[in-house]
Length: 114
Length: 112
Figure 1 (spheres, each protein chain N blue to C red):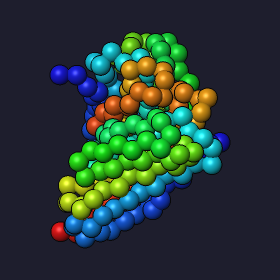
Figure 2 (figure 1 turned 135 degrees about the vertical axis):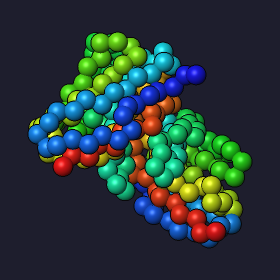
Figure 3 (figure 1 turned 90 degrees about the vertical axis):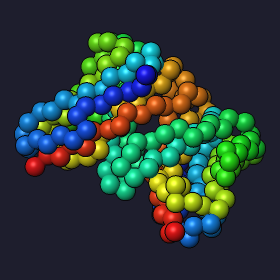
Figure 4 (figure 1 turned 30 degrees about the vertical axis):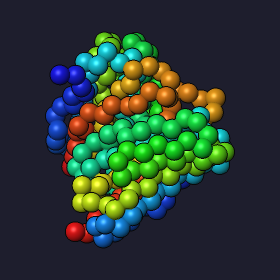
């Protein structure tokens, strides 16, 4: 059963702690994305990766870091430098680099930092 | 940077009424995709439009791409409670085929 998994679904952290969100896909997709969604807002791109061992900053990369050591995995670390980390984080993937491919989304992780 | 404006932001309808959301760009688009996100869920791909003037239908949903490829619309005929959610357009500018530009979405509420 192919798809994208994100874990955990809910995550709670204290302010000042780094936290890593998991994203795994078994769709054999080359490109992977991390988005942030705030209540009533659209999707804002944090980081994306078109190929293994390469990634680019999106529109709101400050306070976040990523790695792409394996094709299947694209973890996102929310660092203590991120001023407002509480949000819904969505991971997505698509087959190739072209924007003509549809994006497949994972179920998301709701992060709450207090 | 390039933007895609989506209107309205919110829409409440009675079940059975029609609904339309619009996406507009000041620049020519290469293609546009539409996604639906149910409350508490994640976006799910609905359709992609590529050609000027293209019209595609999925049951009660009709998608259009403008002749100038600068705007698009999603129309739902006779809404049902299952249509509740937020509808997003996501577009790629001509010449830039790597990153999608997302609209802010239209949240649809349907009163039974």
